[in-house]
Length: 353
Image (tube, rainbow, N blue to C red; front, side, top):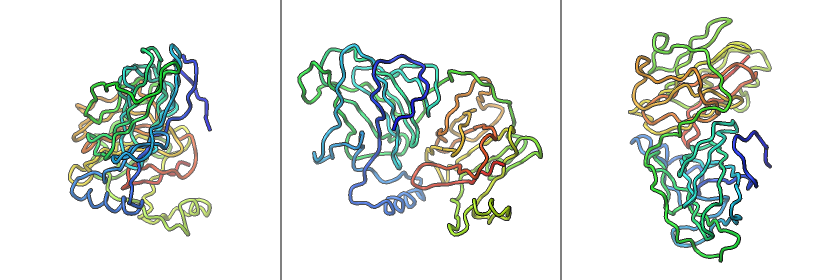
C-alpha cells in the first residue's frame, strides 16, 4: 500500500517502497533481545545480523539466496521510497555511479539535496529520486549495516539494478567512498515553520528524568534513558484513561502534557556509562521538530539549537552518549509512546489531553 504524499522533486516513475531489514539466522527474537541486553552492560551493540535484506531478498555469506533485481530505463527519473524496518540495524544505502536526490524525510517534504550515500535509522523513511543517466549496464545497489552506529552484519547487503537495454549479469561497478560516522543528514523543511523557543538548562537536571508542566502553558521534559516501562496488559494505560483514573503505577512512566495548542519540549539524554549506543527516538501519534542533537553533555550555552527553521519528522537519532532536543504541539489527544526503536526499548508513555 502506497500513501502518496507530497514530492518536492520531479520524477517519471514511482518504484514504490524499498524495504531494508536484517535477518538473524538461527536466533529467535527473544534470543536477539537477550544478547543485546547482555552486550549493553558492556556498552556493546546488538548481535551481528546474518544478512541485510533488500525488499526481503539477500545472499548469505555462504552464497545462499538471491539478490533483489530492479530494471530501469535510460534517462528516466525514478522515485524510490526507502524504509528501514530493521530491528537493530542502522543502514546506509547507495547506488553505484548514481546520485540520489533526497526529497522527503518521514513523509514530510524537505528542500531536495543530493548525496552518494544516505543513512537510515531504524524506523526512518526517505523518498529519493534516482536519475538513470549512466551508461547502460548493471550496477550494485548497496545497503550496508553501520558499525559507526553499533550495527553489523555478516554479509553485504546488495541488489542488482540493470538498464533495460543492457545484458543481464553480475555488476562490476565499484562503491562510492562510504562515510563512517553515525550522523544524520543535514536537512531543511520545504515549508518553514518557526518553533517558539524554550530553555532546558535552568529548569531541569539534564541527567535525571523529570518534567515541569506549567498549568495552561507548555511542558519541558528531560528524559534520561534509564528503564523500560512495565505495563499490566490486563489494565493498560488506556483503561486508566477510560476510567478517569490518574493513579498510574510508577512503572508505567506516564508524563502528562498540557492541553490543545500547548508546546512540549523534550531533551533526551544518554548516560555514556550505561546506554552508550545511538538510539532512534520515535514518537507515536505526532511529528516533532528536531531542535538540535549532538554528542557529549548538553550545555545550552554552546548547543546549536534551531528554532527558526527546524526539520519536522517522527524519528530522529539520539547520538551515542549525547543528546537530542525536540518539540511538538499537543494536537492529537491520546496515550502515546515515546520510544527508542532498538532491541532494548526505553519508553515513556505520553498522555496528551
